[in-house]
Length: 360
Image 1: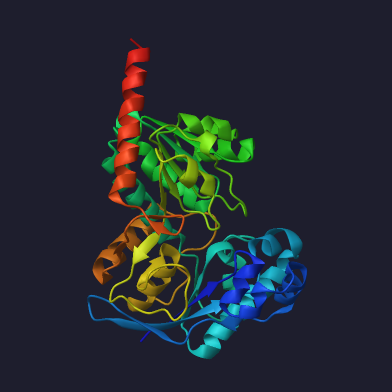
Image 2: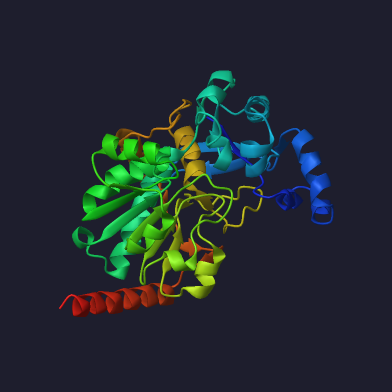
């Protein structure tokens, strides 16, 4: 049996309360100082997953006690690398054969390449299956809302990253127009030239032109606000922490927001700790690590700042083989119901009628 480990981390210092309840009451400055010095922690006992093929794997979830802000702003990169590598060493001690990098541990530095070189175990970021599920979920939601793809505009926010670039390359072929949105114009133009489609944009105000949005930045704060979005727009938020402000959920009922990369794992397994999903549900990056273990492929499958179409296709095939499927749509830690989809469909229809009337 090939066993896995997956690295998680707190999004805010208060998230440490999942392991240390006293963290709810400790001043944040003291809590941050504690986390910066803390060693990796095992968050779950051994979890078992069984494929529809009857293949089995076991694994552990290990917490790297650093927040995104600590990883990208407050600590030297070498210190962050050392902490993540310490997690991989703990994974090996536990008996894992493969380790997955979750959230910002897959973003810092060179996208897992240096970590894989220093790790005693093969490493994967999970980005290939994250792309696959982001595309699948976005297309499904857009179809439900009634988007006519050849006549619609797609926007990819964070398109200079590995997930965003591959989503733009694959999905952009389906749409009449694609906006490639990044923070640096030179890097954004380079993506447009590389994938051979799209318009480079660095102004988020242009997002209001998009019918469908995939957002997957490495920002540690919300960047998409209610005023940025077109009536009836569909937004697939793949970022962790989320890119879409909770205000969108409260103020824009006409907009359909879904979390990207949320997967139902075969057998409804209990992972042993609460990461705010129903039992048997996981992020796609976790699922890629698990399905590689089920397949007996203890290898560094997805690394670096590029994800190939072949890697995406491989994870789609592995998901189908082992019984991983998209979960029910979720947004802002709640299930997206049929009413929300109907509101977005109605708003889109009205917006399209107004556009036709205005153009005569």
